[in-house]
Image (cartoon, rainbow, N blue to C red):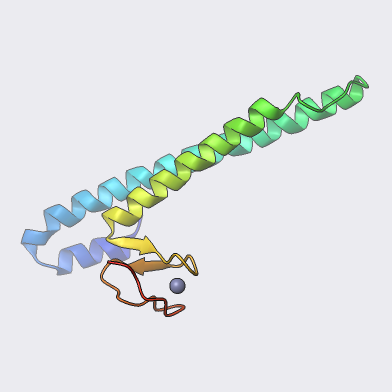
Length: 119
Ligand SMILES: [Zn+2]
């Protein structure tokens, strides 16, 4: 729970509370989706490790056997990127194309590296 945000939403007047609470709920849901996918990746890492050991133990070749799992990890990582971008959009944020730091959509220049932002 991000209590700073809840506090902000309370302090920002009643009219704004509903919108901000909705935004907070959406962001929490998306963050939950990210954790869920990160857990899936961890499970796949474990599965790959077990498969490799099994092959090793059977004195079988390992190559090619784990490509599918690796592709699954890549796919889930791409999903996480998409969800993270959704959260940034909800929070009116973006990523600087030069340094990759989170910046506010309204920033003309990146506060970290100074790059002029395209509008
Ligand atoms: Zn930057």
